[in-house]
Image 1 (cartoon, rainbow, N blue to C red):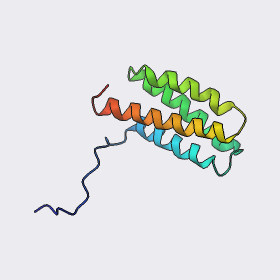
Image 2 (tube, helix red, strand yellow):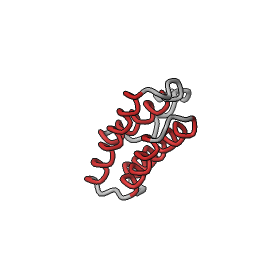
Image 3 (cartoon, rainbow, N blue to C red):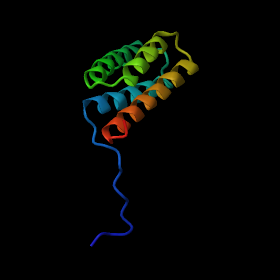
Amino acid sequence: MNDPKAPRPSRQPLLDALGQMCTDGRQTAEYLWQVPKDAAARQRILDLLTQIGTESAKQGRREMPKLVEELKIAAQASPSPQQVELLVDGFDRLTKLWQAAKSGLL
């Protein structure tokens, strides 16, 4: 029988390539809290944003590519706590848009 104390499975959809890129981007943006001037991490974020924009456009999504363009501007701004917060929040929004589309809400 099912164990009533067992944790319920998450309702989060399985990660596809787009979901993985959103997750990787958020983790990289969070890393910038520790090392805000890491040029390689900033380039990784720009690369991920380009890939997310391309992939989301292929899937016919309209909001994600718009958000990607806004985040690219933020990623190129001078390092600051506000900039890192914008990037982390932006990747959170991308992830939520991805989850909503995968679950059939969009």
